[in-house]
Image (tube, rainbow, N blue to C red; front, top):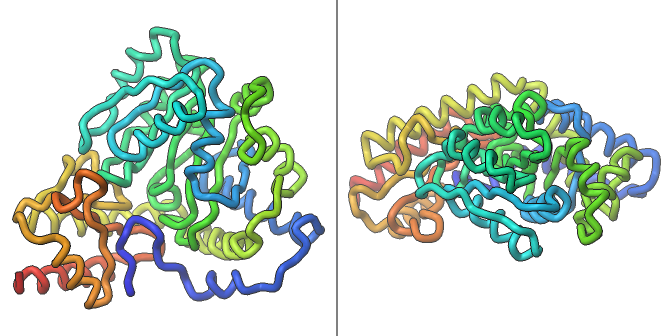
Length: 353
């Protein structure tokens, strides 16, 4: 089965093989060396000198860590889809004050609107998804970062779950204080693990917040990472796999990897415009997942079932978009030729509908 869903993605055989290594002591010297290697490579992939923490959880856990540790006043949640909304919900459920700056699904956040909100002085943190996986829209995180840089007390926190390793993310250059991601999308690793860069601003703030929790205490995690360790027993198989996969990503080269993802996205978008309609304007579309409007009014469930029968797994629309749109993910270890082949198979399926 070829996975063209927005996570998990297919994983290379040699990376899967790395996960079968025998367990080691997670407090021993071998594990410390492994941890340091993985975090140093993660820093290069993220474009940062900030501390990187590793979490045996999905990135949703680190979203919770971000709101518990990154704000002691009020959060501005930038929302243009399901996952921006989720981060806002997580903040509220953790007792943090949070307002939404919301635009319709299929639109991108306007940096000028962010500046208008920050001028009020009400906020000490901003949260935003880079690639909003539910709609296939890429928010302008570099431009938003330029706005946030003007407000020294505001922490800039970015969800790069479906962009890190597939789209340009330069944490230090963009002024990102907290950058989180899962590993099962553009990083092309099995699900169940996540990572996060944290700035000094975040860590200093976290240490002053008494109710920041324990498992997802970023200050505690960063202190452990400085010693080459996880706070708790980590998933060693994931660390073995990350050691291998991160080396492969850096060997390919980040600019080349970003360009490969862009070429796959270009092919998917061109096909979508010719066969259906893009859900969002092309200039704001993500390079890792394309959301396609069901402008033909076909039975998407039937189309996706037939594609699955032929060995291709795609995603229906997310939430309210189910049946109204579908998504083609082109991320991780996928290649342009594979995307072109998939599009041909979809064309063949459509002729029979």
